[in-house]
Amino acid sequence: MKGLGTDEDAIISVLAYRNTAQRQEIRTAYKTTIGRVGHNDLKSELSGKFEQVIVGMMMPTVLYDVQELQKAMKGAGTDEGCLIEILASRTPEEIRRINQTYQLQRATALGSVGQDSDAANFAVLLEYGRSLEDDICSDTSFMFQRVLVSLSAGGRDEGNFLDDALVRQDAQDLYEAGEKKWGTDEVKFLTVLCSRNRNHLLHVFDEYKRLSQKDIEQSIKSETSGSFEDALLAIVKCMRNKSAYFAERLYKSMKGLGTDDDTLIRVMVSRAEIDMLDIRDNFKRLYGKSLYSFIKVPFPLKMVL
Image (tube, helix red, strand yellow):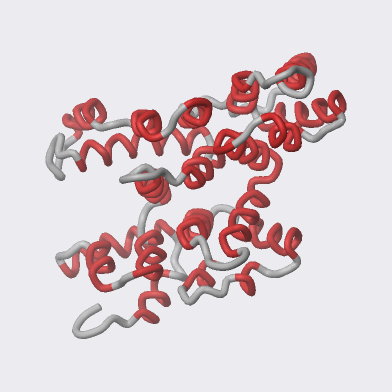
């Protein structure tokens, strides 16, 4: 980045072949050696989609999620798809870290305390910074708001315990809340899908199909609508096969005319070190083409494959 112009190939060769921890070490070494923040230098030297990818790769994973959530609710309009994608797919522990970092970032941005605040001021930051839940409630409404608030609490059972009686009861409750009645008891869907552990829910889905002769996804599509429907479907898909869910997100971001660059970049950057190999396999299985060949846009997302 020194002098006129920027050697983008050099940036790719350094950053694309390092993991997140190594990139954080590079960031520290750059600041120590050069006396400037490398993150800021990258933003000043790069632009467009390339900047989005590189700057995103330089962030710790939880901070990147926080940035995307804040961006989804910033200004006029809301990126409902981004909110659903992150909150439906992250583990309860990841959600808890996102909540803490989100509030800390919001407090710092609002200037509650200085940039170099010490540990004693940490509680002040958390007290005066707006929480993720605060922003969700300001930007969304009705049942969509309620499902996002429920997911953002990070309270899903993380165990693997299976109670056959509760499985049957939950499946029966969902059936009676939807297919069996006029109208839909949306709260029952929210309660079961946002709180039970994955093993339990997979058995509930099987029992539900036995009772109703319909897949749970079919019932959600027929019984709910809008962003609330999208959120419930995302939960079900992530419980069944999270990598397939992200493969679908990538496919839809590139399908047809135009590209949803924000979704494409976010999924590629955020999942690069978590389950990208599984996402690639599921993409090929579902759509008959490799993810590598499907990406046609002229920026370096292929480097994380």
